[in-house]
Amino acid sequence: MALNQDHIRLLFGLKLKQLRIDKSLSLNDLSIKSGLSISYINEIEKGRKYPKSDKIMALSEAFGVDYDSLVSLKLSKKLEPISELLNSNILTELPLNMFGIDPADLLQMLSDAPTKLSAFIGTLIEISRNYNMSVEQFYFSALRTYQEMYDNYFEDLEQEAEWFLEEFDIADTVLLDEKYLSDLLKKHYGYQIENIDPDKYPELADVRSMTIPKGEQMRLYINKQLSDNQRAFIFGREVGYQYMKLKKRLDTTSLVKAETFEELLNNYKAAYFSSAILIKHKLMAEKMASFFAQPSFDGQKLLEIMAYFNTTPETFCYRLSNVLPKYFDVRQLFFFRISNQPNQAVYEVTKEMHIARKHRPHTVKDEHYCRRWIAIKALQEIATNPLPNAETLVRVQRSRYMDSKEEYLVISFAKSNQPNPNQNVCVSMGILIDDHVRQLIKFMDDPLILGVEVNETCERCAAFDCKERQAAPKVLQQRTRNDAMRKAMEKLTKN
Image (tube, rainbow, N blue to C red; front, side):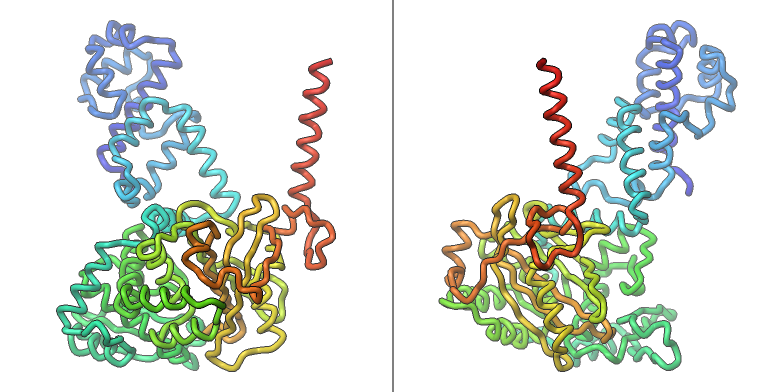
């Protein structure tokens, strides 16, 4: 990938500075040897200026190196991680300003302490390689961090949804459905909508949707096994792309191959727009206020609210993560999705989001998640007693984490995954219980809501008598051994 001029200047400056340090030359020394001013050399080293060929020649003679090696973009081993980072598309594609980072400030940091930052960058690259982290996964992590920074509530996207509803004269009490949105795509935006034929393309059996542009027209292929509310969400997302004029896009989210971060960000914006026009935030806030005011937990009431909005548990929970911080000042919460094949005891966190901070539970690779989680219990329940198609199991639990003693109200929705009936999924919303939450949620002390001690994974858990344990606490044991060694070493040094 071609580097932009900023990166070329930075690479040359980093190389120049490292050469000067390696040869034990001060800025004044190099100025005398090269005939260039100290201020000019300083500007070069900071990546602000790129010297002309005669000045590069003067520098190469001052260092005693040939011209070609000095202008080469290849850096020394010390700075190689920075070169690798700049040669990737991460810095050029990731909109750093979203995270409050001025790209110029980042380049300044790189030029001020290149060796230290190079070591840090090298560490991050090594971690990503050890976990087989692709560029797409990096983008996903960056996007999730961006959502969490803003409590997953974006006023500009809410405003776009409001403008759309107003422009198309949709009353506050009217709820959009699959038919309205599909007709809008076809008649207003010129879409051609067809079903994916699983007999003709069996490889696409698990793909929910895909788009193929054909001239001025967009073809949308959709899995005919999807429920009407899943189809409505996909149609709403396509409307979002068109209404907000988002040009760079993903063709499918089933097997994501994101060429740029902007594609992933636009997909998120379109999906947010879809949930906002399908589940109007004020209506949802009213429904949830009534639900929280009940003296006892009523899972059926939650299902009725979801049915009212004709939405899936995942879209409902995700929309709830927008509404809770904005309307109820509930900011300590998490959302996650766990997938499982009914005939296997393997559970995988396939989506997560944490608001305010990193909560428990969260993704831990290659370990066994605590079997006391209500989400896993719900998946075990429907694996033993399968639900009729499209039905949802609702379960609730107060989860107390053994180490931190923090307690969460966790509500889980488990069902068979469409279009893949051989996989069950459970989405959960967890709310950290504090004084404000206790006052807000009147059914918090409902005796039918069990309080259960839980942990993150078996490998980190000190509950040795746990009947649900799936693996030895090797992480905890190693930590205990290390603590014992440190104490012994401290004792030895005092003798």
